[in-house]
Image (cartoon, rainbow, N blue to C red):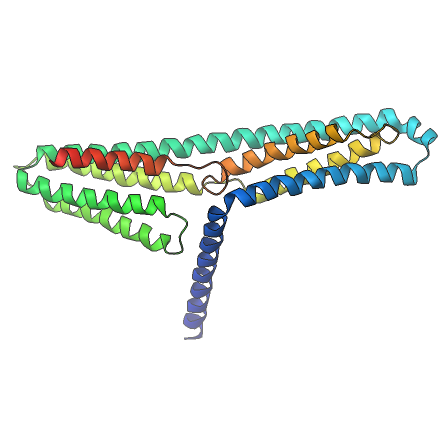
Length: 288
C-alpha cells in the first residue's frame, strides 16, 4: 500500500508539473513581444558589460608594456574562442532551422493524410459515407481547436480527446469490413496513415535540442566578449561597435532559440491552423 501511495503522489506531482509548464508557456505566448525584447536587450547589455569587464581587468592587472608583449598570443586565443563561438552558433542555427522545417513538413503530411481519408469515403455506400464523413469533420474540428489553443492548461485533455476520436474512426472502419465491401480496405489504410502521421507530427514538435546547448552558447559569447575587451585595453571606446556586436550575436542566438520553440516568441508556426482551416472548408464544400 505504501508503494501504491508513493506512486500516486509521484503521479500527482508530475501532473502538477505539467500544468505549471502549460501555464508558463501560455503566459509566454500571451506576452511574447515583451519576452523577446527583454531577452535581446538584457543579453546585449550583458555582452557590453562583459566587454567593459575585460577592459577593466586589463587596465587593473596589467601594465601597458606587459599587455603589448602578450598581445599577439592573446589575439590567437581570442580568435580560437570567437571561431568556436561562430561554429557553434552556425550549427545551432542550422539545426533549429532544420527541425523547424521538419515540423512544417510533418504537419503538411498529416493534413494530407486526413484529406486522403476523407476522399476515400467516396467509395462507400451513402449511409456509411455520411457517418464517417461526419466523424472526420468532428475530428478535424477537435484538431483545429487544439491547434488554436495548444498552450492552454487543458491542452493535454484536448489532445487525448482527439486521439479518442481518431481511434474510434479506425475501429469503425475495421468494424465495417466485409468481403463484399472491399472499399473499406483503402479507407482503413488511409486512417492508419492519418494516425501515424499525427504521431510523427507530435514527435517532431516535441523534438528539441537540450537547453544546456543554448546556455553554453550564451556562456561562450559572454566569455568571448570579456577576451575582446581585454585585448582592446588601449584602444578608445567605440560604443557603436560594442552595441552592434552585442545586438548581432544575441539576435542570432535569439532567432535560433525562437525557431527551436516556435509559437512562443516572434516566429509563429501558423501552418497547423491554416492548413486545418482550409481542409475544413474543403470538407464543407464536399458535404454540400
